[in-house]
Image (cartoon, rainbow, N blue to C red; front, side, top):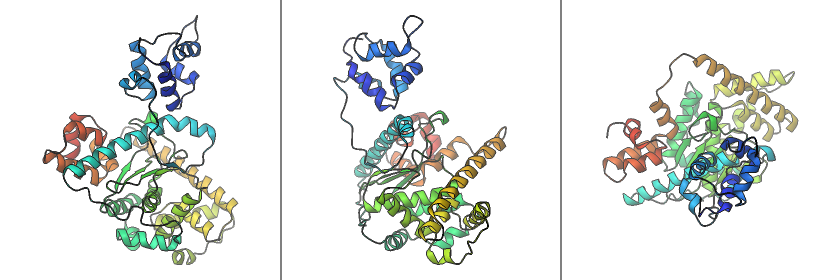
Length: 391
């Protein structure tokens, strides 16, 4: 197609995290005479013009708007914050396209919400964003976080399910003006992003701070991730977090979150002696369930308190990961043929009450159209009214 800059084809593919081989296969191009890989090379090097039909297919595979291919040159990469993840190269490459698309989507939603807040004159600065300096002791920072949101550890632990405890914590943080979403893919299970590649994302904005938690992770781990990402917002640093915390800032946020959920006094009351790793795993799991946190969090606190060594911590982390994968598979098998919550109930839970309430209120006041509301909520405009309820 005349006018298409071949550099845009290369840029779109590479930012989608696809090799030329994988992209060619996904696009189903080439044939017996010209292999798919060679055909894509010809398009990307300007030897062959791309048809509109293929361009539309590329837009879908690369997760880019069709109009972007008509730009004169590849756009400059927008600032996405810092990447605090420590990943193997293959996992980083594999998850790059999906994760970049997810982060772009979050920025668009956040920008729309920020504009709406400004339109209705509710764009109040959140003074807590960037209020904590990283040189503050983790215990002091944890105490400040708890006081800021009004966290009651006894109330948190009284809930019968970890999901209920998480909802309690989420409401406290949303009440401070931070939006909390549960998102782990681009709209279908085919685009699931593994927890090893992305556990959470914090967008530290003074007007509309955002937290995204990967809902592929165990429900028992979400409260910790939420507090970890909120610690990022208190520090005032936007960025992505993964499963491994090897950077100093990640360990700092881990310490803040873990100290709030499991103070030193509570940890030292228990007898952690065990004959072997299996017994220790069961002991930690039982204790973790009783206080609505994950076994990994308890193990991390044991590590930071000097009660276990790093090699034991690594073994425990692997054990708890295996237990969650097995539980997830069992839950999926148990749901086969049975009905669960409706699409809208699940969707509202993932979006969080803060966003749903804001959209409902601003649509009623005429400050937000159904089209923009759909963009904020991640649904088609026709589904907005069913999602937010009666207006």
